[in-house]
Amino acid sequence: MLSEASRRASADLERVLGPEGLPVDQWRVLERLADGRGLTMSALADEVEMKLPSLSKLIDRMVGSALVQRAQDPADQRRVLVYVSDIGLEKHRLLRHRVRRTRHDLETRLGDERGRELRRLLEDFLRHPGA
View 1 (cartoon, helix red, strand yellow):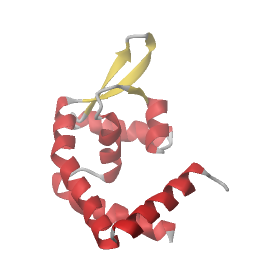
View 2: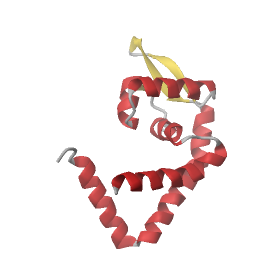
View 3: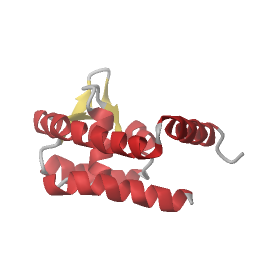
View 4: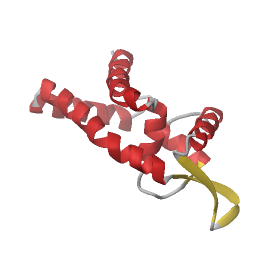
């Protein structure tokens, strides 16, 4: 059931992001980097739950689309950080309201009580991996 729910949630998200030409994985990266603080590739891979080689290819595409940029870490010149670009930040601003509206519509369909219960159950599930 979780796999099916995940597919449906991703499909809902794709319907919102698709017209803007933004895949769900790129949205997840923009969402994580929108605070303006850069992350190392390994930290970003952990945050968006992707394997490093897959994330590297994704970031290459996003750099090519000017959504993100790479820069040396000022604290350690050997490391590279990934930052959201101005274009990426604008795309995030444009889409975040649509994404939130989609989430709100789902919560409305479930009703307040059932929505809170689902959220609580999912949070419990995520807090206790492998349990």
